[in-house]
Length: 201
Image 1: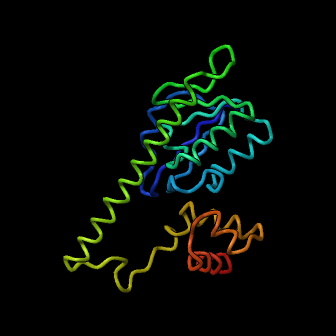
Image 2: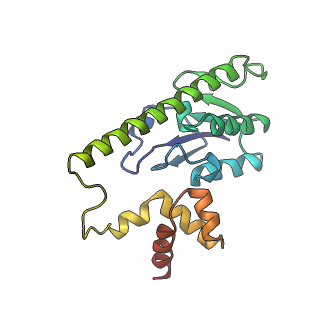
């Protein structure tokens, strides 16, 4: 199978830019509302893709750009290496580079390009976090208050549709412990408790 993998960082992003890709794929896997800092194998769609690769069903994976794979150098390289070692051709669509040449050999530029881009995305993420934190501190110093407003209640349907909620439900049904789920999804114990109550209703 040729599979296209898409990811957006927030649930409000609907992946509209991915619609510009008119190529045909056997399967498209989406992880919408999933931060790039979450390891690929801990994402719902990412873990599904890895399972398909393990089963030998995948011949090619297409990423819109390399940051969709991950925002850290270590995770991105580990993920790409895993796919490559399992005989999967990887394509990064926005720069038109593939892991293999037309004759099936490894592209000599692949490691260089992916390492540089992954490093750039990691630095970009750290810079965004730094700027965001500075903005938060300035807001608080100016008298602003962070967090939800007193009395705020998240709509139940909105909560149920969140990718993180769906992943927690999946792992709870598999009998995973809170510690295991927290390690996989980087979520809080309070969120897991909220999901437990949701599925027990």
